[in-house]
Image (tube, rainbow over all chains, first blue to last red; front, side, top):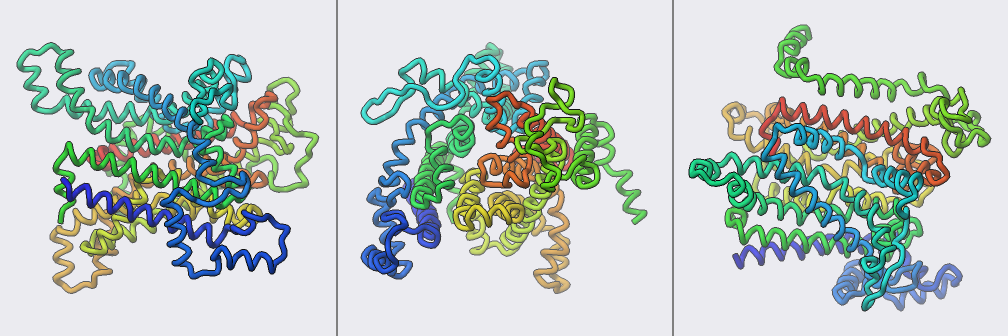
Length: 324
Length: 306
């Protein structure tokens, strides 16, 4: 087990090195740190002097090592537009994205679990067939289109809910929260439904197929033969064993949700990390773009590694199969 | 030729197809859409790329059957005064070209990597597959968004818009090749130990001939199955990128960029600029997905659990 954790962690560090190398290359070849600091109105001679002072004329590898050293200390460079450390800008936008993802996850759990279990228990029921049909349609509708339709229906036509922004937020120890005001909660409804709509079909299908597979196993047949009450068989015997694979995929899928937040946040002008990223692209704010790449890359690597290690703890075949 | 036609007529695939109403309807719709895309310059009422045809005074005309509609513009016009139907037809053509191009590139990269990794095994296998695994641990949409953001900053927006079609093919191709690499590698590993491969090795054929002429054709079933779904994915990715402003420019809009430009005007009530391209996009992706599901069930039931 210890060896497995060490191997998995080394791999994670290796991946982070690759991501930082990509990030650094972008910054080095495309970005211009001198412009980030002083703007355009400086003579070439002064520029060159500043480049020397900043060590921008050093060999690539030395500069890369310096970049890593700073990154480990949490210094990912200055954002050209915000005139602030890039990491600080990202962290100030993070609460918005995290709250959106959190509410979406709640919606996902409370809708996909009951429906997934129901469609597995009664596969031939009209409701199950209807759900499976809808879920094929669901994966074919891009998330931004769902978002636009929701806005058109509930914000433009019916005028029930706000269409953009986060509304009123409350600042608790530097965390801008929209949970504590009615206005903030109202603003959360449409974005989280839109984001949930793209993930729901995947989850329902996943839970359904895992549950159906387990219902076919020998020990479930034995439970039936023992004459146990059907609720006990479904919810205690079958459901418990469905949870393990579902939880692992859940961990990975929440990472995927971060990718979709870029689209959702754009539609709803949600002031989160994804919205900030697109603004950074439009403004050619290379430092901020690279910082986002590194931060999001780190989130993914950590989530994947933790999920793998947990899975390795519960399922020994995985950590043994990886051994040479 | 004649013989292969007979073989096709008697095949299990066609037998199944004739008995599946969903598959037939999806196929007809898809064939129709592809035909429209191919024949776009002939059948579309106007040429949306020709500035002579565009009159800003016609901007935001609603569809013909709505009040204030113009009989000349069946589905209305967009914000620049282009006929929406023609723009959509050209957009469909672009989406199809980019989708198929990207899948070809993915398949090419992925098959090469998968073949070499699966057949050679050992160090090169673990290196290539580790690379694929690492990339797969990031969602493909994220990878595509990152690559196109980098390209856009590197090329500058003007150059990027000029080269948008080939660049998008490269972006989406690079973002999704590991799917192919994994699938092909898995089937190569299965085929490798079979007797016909041993026989080929015994008569002294070179490694490359064995890989390309003997093993590759036997991996094509699984390649075909994932290709259908991948085309749908690629079209979705293209639409998402264009919607974010990282794809096709407004002057040469794909379905995604049309939705983007329509979205800005939805608050003033111009719903059709978003609605019709959106509907066409969903229809296109849906029929490809349905066909892909059917193909997977028929050709390879085992692949279902992936």
